[in-house]
Length: 208
Image 1: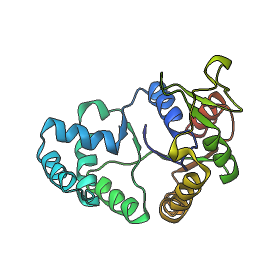
Image 2: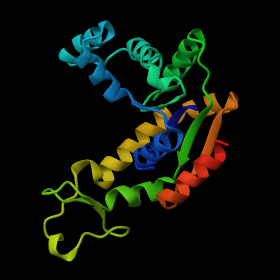
Image 3: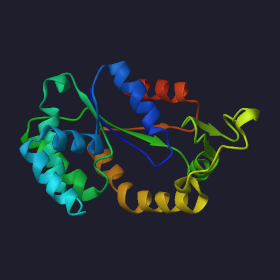
Image 4: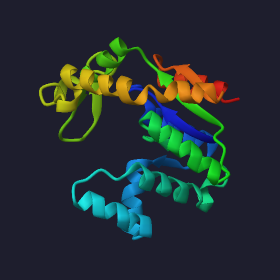
């Protein structure tokens, strides 16, 4: 199974990625992790990327795509992979599509986890973190125990203002990749506004 996982911030992509790579026995390729690994391994592409990062510059799309192609060419991707965090824009999707064609790799599916904005805001702004343990709670869905309620905090990127800014960026930059993959007939859209186990079941059904 060769797939890309997409969805708005707070849709539960991280939770579903962990479940799906276990179900399909495929590696989870996060572009951030991939970049760091290539730099640590000292590959030619990694050295190139490190130069940009050391200067505080964005790594060019062409270099990220080359690293993706290099990564999916490794033995552990022989039976498939899950790409997460890339592409984030329509031009990136088009360039990745061409690179995959050149590498004779065909995607099986692009899984879109859909959750309405109002539920995303509710999910994110209700999150609280225990600074001592790093444990994440939610005021409504998973309240912190009484004995730690006084110490849990709301992270600065979980405020309503920050959440709305991230959603606006998603809708303007990332959402345009959805019709691109829909036109190819490989988009699988699932309702993510449910318990994680239910969402996983919906995804696996959509991928059958």
